[in-house]
Length: 239
Length: 239
Picture: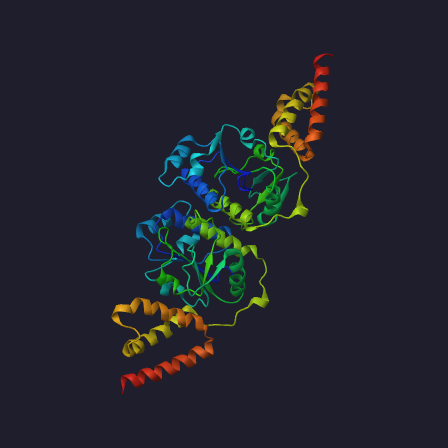
């Protein structure tokens, strides 16, 4: 498996078949092939897929209804966003600076790079799945980029660094699927405890998800955490 | 005038309105606005221009029937090409390496960056106007890029270098218009001398144009050259 294959490029709710096709072609231009689509506008995806020049990458693209299911075991989740100052508790890196640690991560681990819909970009909910935010440094007067071009720029910048930087290596951490499992284990006990209430459920879930991400749990520590949570849940169910 | 305005982005014979629009938008994303079109497919340009989101840059774009007329006084002409090994007597630079001297040139001089048509790229004739070739390092199996994405990558890479490198400065040299004048002065005398024959005219013209480019004439030297050529031509006309 090449390092390029270890990167899932995830288009969240793309709406335009031409953009989906352009993204796929740009991936091919730079050796990427692992394309995932979350809840695409169905007609758009059908059209893109059946286009004359549609590449293999488009035919093999995976479709999932919701974002978490498209993240799989990615142990680093990076969201792209042009939004300034919206990132709150997220680390935000400019493309040139962010491509280096992402490329380094891909040397031996999997990652996901998320692109939002043409119209709205990534929502706060989508961003809550991300470890950090990658921003393409555009003009203030015209910050929002075409989806296909944004994918092209990221793929270009990633391959621009021919070598990884060993000194930048981040410690091994669990994948998005494991993080999601931990989040899901926490939800019922936090609902029981009143931390999550029906009226603030969405916001608290995002907060929780971010919190689990920031732990950057090593596999061993994640197993231990899950063990503890199971015990607590048992105690809650059997008072 | 900002350094971005000193760069003419020249699309040669673009055929697809969406690509023209995408190129204009990418320019805006990175602060460029000086767009020229050579012999565009007229319907495509009309459509692109009248599109709802068509930016100011597209409305102010200049159209010319032939390439030399779109180069103006650009004292550096760079052609983009994915072609490997076609460059023969051209210096070919990869995007990351080539953006630096181009950016440095733009600090106080004008330049033109050429993009060929979606289908054929730049022809040998177009390339003969260029000082050197800029190549985006794509995969061998899929080297050809979408036009809008290629423009986006070049604009991104140029702004990626926030500072110029003074040590890289090339000496002042004349613009494309001056070079063309010298080429045109040489043609009749070379035709008279048998260097240019009807059967090899196109090839020899390209060769000649390249030769004039490679001289990288300083303004003073160009004036002197033209003076000499006028003398020679007078002698030819009055044997």
